[in-house]
Image 1 (cartoon, rainbow, N blue to C red):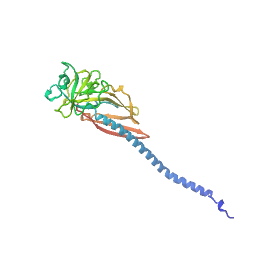
Image 2: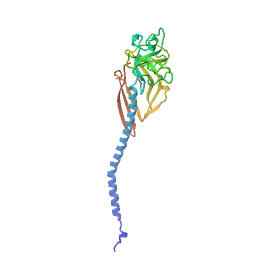
Image 3: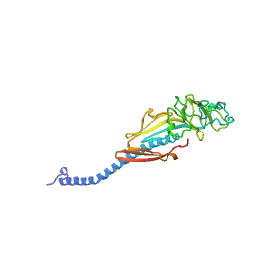
Image 4: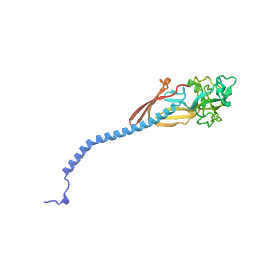
Length: 285
């Protein structure tokens, strides 16, 4: 008896053999496919963590390069520092008047000195390559720093001997001086002030922000306030998340040479990476 083509098909044995063979092939290929998928997932997680870490360390490096000398303070996994928006050399009383062509800067009250007698300074004339890039919007938004040689004196908010807040009336117009390849411009202080000491190189810095970077849980937080002030008054913003427990550390052992070492460890999906960065900061006031 012949079967018509319409009634032809697979036998039960053939179907069982195919199923067995497919099972064997799937058993061989499954670990390979799974391993490739896992490798892709791990690589993606590491790349994402690397990008986040570079973002965080890149911002830290950019800001710390403008840190005022002796402003860096580390407490556990918390970093505090003050950045400068401008700098240059100030005028002393001992400098010869003929060197200063502009009459606005010939008064003793407009030249630097450390004595509180006959009176405190109410303003100061400064040498600079440019004028003040960002005039203060409010009193104290910017601060003048001179002779700072310790973080203790810098962060003495109630009795600062190394800095004074600037008034909104600070002039941003350069005062002409043919004897100097730059400009002379004048600051106005929020209140009369006398400095504890002079700078060895007659340097000054204009401080714009006090920063605080800290680890809270798995988030790296950043906050800042205008001028020189307690940074806890600022508002936290999340720089990155996914930081491992205890995964942020600052090594200040080489800070005397101007190097701050930072270690940052990130975790995600079972993956972990550690990034190390050496940041060079100014160390001469």
